[in-house]
Length: 232
Image 1 (cartoon, rainbow, N blue to C red):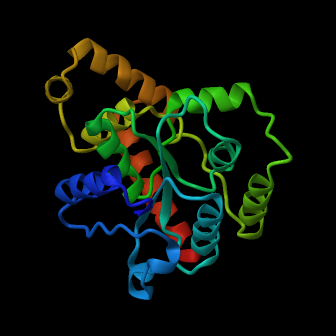
Image 2 (image 1 turned 135 degrees about the vertical axis):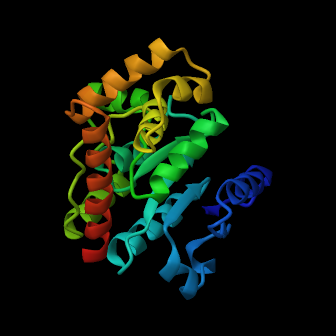
């Protein structure tokens, strides 16, 4: 995490460390404080309460560097995102937006997906962006970020994974593990009928007919993204 080191970021780091014991969670106040060894081994960068200039430095470092670590913004909420956050989400220069008003289990599931090379953008945010595509052209940071994306030859995602909600991502992850619908319902405290509705929506968004095809699409997408990162 590159973050304003307040109580919330410290607590979040502890939660992430407990949830993902196989990974080292490090909090730094700025990119300049990250060691070269850490830079070479980063899988996911979470950005929280940083000045605009610091966000820009991180984006440029990881898009132009040899290792393309996944990046996500931790924000208070998505209701009133400022212009440069909107541009980050619209252009997919970052890989996700993580609102702090998500339920903790959903937040952690989304973080896990990002660390595995996926994406997480709240469906409500994507809906608002699609309904209001006009961006503030006077936003100099936004313009620079678009330029970074273009000069880095970044391909935008197909949309299959980005279209999934956090709940659908949770269910897809369990589907890929071969978990039965009834057990998924028990784990997520849902009715079995609700799980079936979510699964139908997942199949529709991913353009697949069953869980085997969904798992194949999911893992192929993951491998493609990892290969893309290695090429970059």
